[in-house]
Image 1 (cartoon, rainbow, N blue to C red):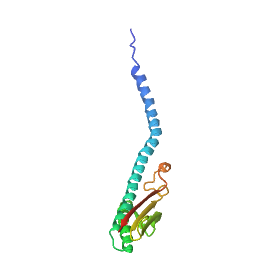
Image 2 (spheres, rainbow, N blue to C red):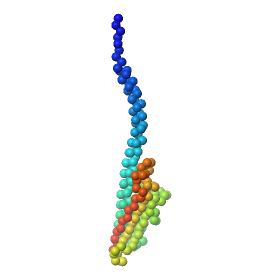
Image 3 (cartoon, rainbow, N blue to C red):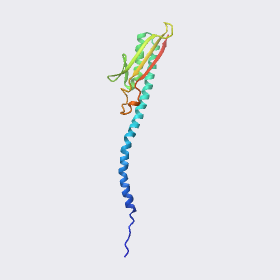
Image 4 (cartoon, helix red, strand yellow):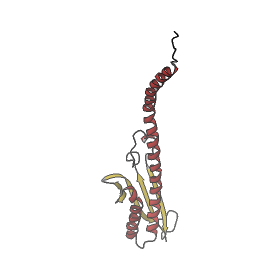
Length: 162
């Protein structure tokens, strides 16, 4: 009687695949933290760029609002209101001479009315300067990307008041 010989190629192949399943899990575990850091870094950096544009816009809006007001006291009040309206979506407000997020002072807010440089004494200018300490107070804290974020976000806008 002849003995039947079974082909064992399928068994060898399935053993190899079983060993590879563990290797894929290990590779995924090694790549996942790098992938998450990259994704959250892009999100955090993009939000910082959006906030940078918001601070620039807030300074410009504050100077414009002050330029159309009648008195110097009214100019400062209107400028501060315009800055606060522009930065409201980020939870940042201009309170006195400080930028505040929640209960924490995160920067400075200066609104001044003075004689324009190089102009006659009757020509006045409104200057709105916002300075946010971004690296110390990021809006989206992502561990590990602090070194690529700017130390300060500082914008100043000047409007001439005749």
